[in-house]
Length: 123
Image (cartoon, one colour):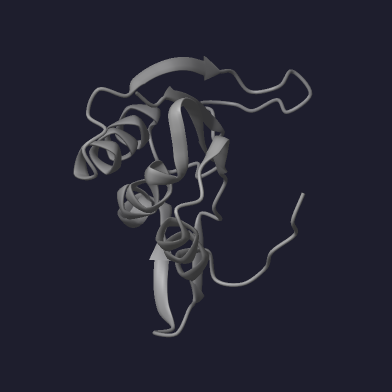
């Protein structure tokens, strides 16, 4: 196992350029962040599709892309559509939602569940 650190957008592009692929890629971004070379504000509500489109090519054929967020203000349906758009943007429109993992029982919440865990099978 390698431990890498730095801006994930830089690393995703670098790994893709090298042709690296993995059986499983996990995307668990913060709900919002400021960083990178441009110091722009990133938000899962606005930018998840871009992150998925950078990560999807790193998943081997038949592999899994785990996408998760704990953004309480992002409905699960919108999160799923953003992930699907990111997959479609890189030609993986045949990726299928394989699993929706519920919140753990020890993370109780009232109202809409803030944690969304979606597992995509990449063709």
